[in-house]
Image (tube, rainbow, N blue to C red; front, side):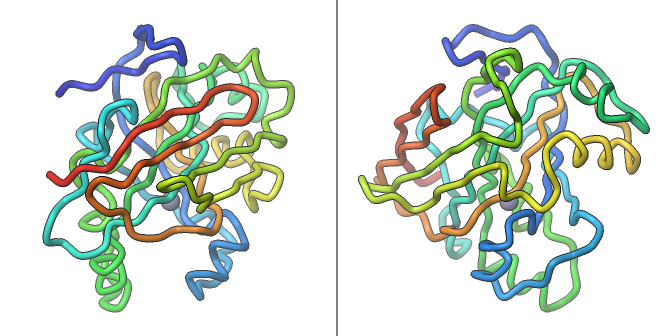
Length: 222
Ligand code: ZN
């Protein structure tokens, strides 16, 4: 199924589909639940184009590769390129915000971490970044005051608030653009709060971007 960025009403957004740039360890409560340490510089990794899929379709998780965990994150869609950008340039390059899942094969990740290897096998597989529709930037009064949540089978598992990010959205994207060029159609996943855990075939998943939308979907096995 080919993926295209959508707005929250389900209309196509005329932007290319490029890469996903992610930050790990951006909320203290998640760092603590993973027994990880705070890193001074943001911990960055990427997911390729084939990772992107619509969250409005069933979320397909790989079978026989160990636990696949939910990580619900604020997703930022860029409408223009950024390189060595300042914060004003970042603000004018943002199309809007939505939600994304940074699906993670947790057992594979643990073994990669142990071996000091990069995380792509755990995080960059096909369909590892289900994305919601995006809400235009003008609909947000403060990017550091955005609340979001995820429930599984009616039980709240994750509650997030961008005020609690260690690296806030706009300075984070500016910093990413010092490391590598960002392009129109790139999506930034801004880190997960605590509450990660395994997904199972048939789970009912509900995600909410407070005051903007709710997406109801379910989990299937590939
Ligand atoms: Zn994540």
